[in-house]
Image 1 (cartoon, rainbow, N blue to C red):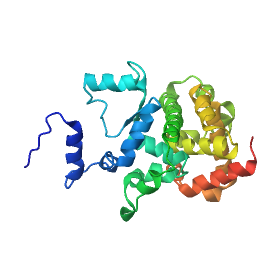
Image 2: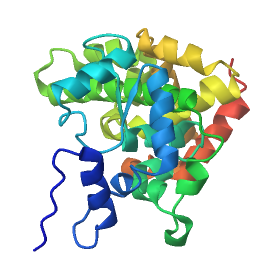
Image 3: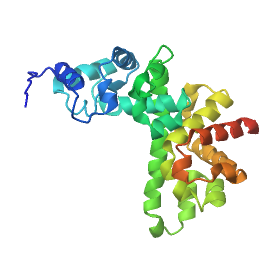
Image 4: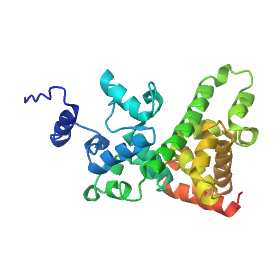
Length: 272
């Protein structure tokens, strides 16, 4: 056994963990946490009022002094609590939206941080096209989509105790979605946060040409009908094309071909 002391130097401790990672299983995102591109992204994200958590539970280990310094940079005391973007989750959001690769984000997230020799995408993701503004916007879209799915999951757990589950579902999901697809939404929605993030971005930004900031604002203001609309279109496509949707929903919702088919369907609708 070898013991190396860092004497409180967290950056040194992280460097040791990264460079001596021969036996312990460590997330690939952690191994990239000190990459210059990731460090630069963290600095840029901070200027937008967000903190990029490059290593898991990094915020929990901050000293009071470190927390105070970061919050001052964010703009005030207490802001850090709701302004943290974990590196892995933020990258998943960016890959899902701006790079249009929901399967990579959902099914193979470790490859987002691996190099080309390992069949990874790190160099293609963390390149000159990646901006801190896009990274933050993508995370905020995914955060709302996940909250929407979690709200549904809470309803689903109480379904048998609800006096009228369809009415309660409809308040969150919209009447058409519940009336038309009430028999499958229990299987679809709990699995769909990444796919839903990709699809709402595809519809509102790429197809309709809306500004990303406007989409973020709409979602964060509580306009969940936007997400319900996307789910309806997705299920409409699956119903009209049973051969393309013959697999289980957990499989479909992490399938790149299924996403491409839904995206093509959305473009064909000419929705505005």
